[in-house]
Amino acid sequence: DADVTQTPRNRITKTGKRIMLECSQTKGHDRMYWYRQDPGLGLRLIYYSFDVKDINKGEISDGYSVSRQAQAKFSLSLESAIPNQTALYFCATSSKAVSTDTQYFGPGTRLTVL
Amino acid sequence: EDQVTQSPEALRLQEGESSSLNCSYTVSGLRGLFWYRQDPGKGPEFLFTLYSAGEEKEKERLKATLTKKESFLHITAPKPEDSATYLCAVQGVAGANNLFFGTGTRLTVIP
Image 1 (cartoon, rainbow over the protein chains, first blue to last red):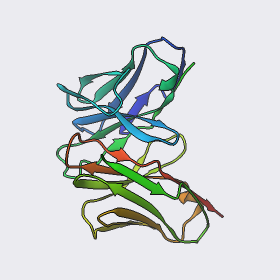
Image 2 (image 1 turned 120 degrees about the vertical axis):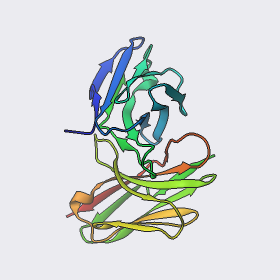
Image 3 (image 1 turned 180 degrees about the vertical axis):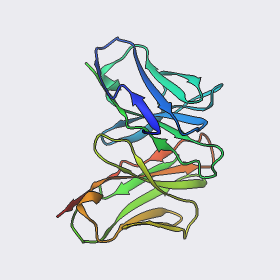
Image 4 (image 1 turned 120 degrees about the horizontal axis):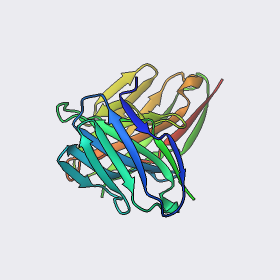
């Protein structure tokens, strides 16, 4: 089984709808991240969480919110989706206990907002 | 501001034809430079972390090197299964713990 899972894998929605993307991990890591990937722009950080009670905004947090329900679960919400939020969304995890703090990525969610 | 530039954007190689991918970076204090491989429709897969100039790491046909301004990913005698997009990212000592990514090099290895 994959260490980092994301649901759904694909989602098509309409402008104005509320959307939630979910991420679960079995790696036992304390740190979790949400990135989006757009063609020609590379991956950009949306939000990150160093533990259940620690949530921080990343480079492009406007229009998004997150919830860390447990150490293993981190959800990303789009309260009112708009077309320019069409992108690939990736969840990642890392561990403070490991000096390299290497981030490991999930398989991604392809979101299309019409 | 942290900045990562990867070149070339795309590279086509014949099977067995060795080459290098470049990652130039600007960061205020390097905590680590990371290389990832990404296949179409999948998440980035971790390859290497480099921490200081002069460091080298190898894995099968891949070898990553680091200087104070750039990193190279050398591919020796590539095979078609090495075809993927290779992403470079830096993590600085200041600010958040996030990775700052380049836009990647799309490698195609032709049999």
